[in-house]
Image (cartoon, rainbow, N blue to C red):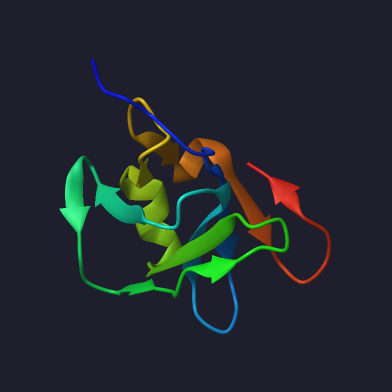
Amino acid sequence: MQFMYGYPPTASVIQKHSPSPEVVCHATGFFPKAVNITWRKDGEDVNEDVELRETLPNQDGSFQKRSILKVPAEDLQKHTYTCVIQHSSLKEELVLNVRNECRILTGRKNTFL
């Protein structure tokens, strides 16, 4: 039995279209600070075109972190991309499917897929 402690992250996936197509995986509200955010394409780890941002503090003492994947929009339709979050407060990894759980930011209003 694994012991979990802390506060689990709340996660979201956002697709941005400008200036270059990218998908952002954002985890927030977690404690302690250590968190792992990775990307998978069709179940395989993706390491290219990934930008992992610094873990930042929230005002309530919890933390937030984001990972950005640069990927052409047509690839998002052809392949299954997932954001995977691992944290000590989670019993199992948190997996967000980009196609099913993504919000699109276009500069107007948010659109849900």
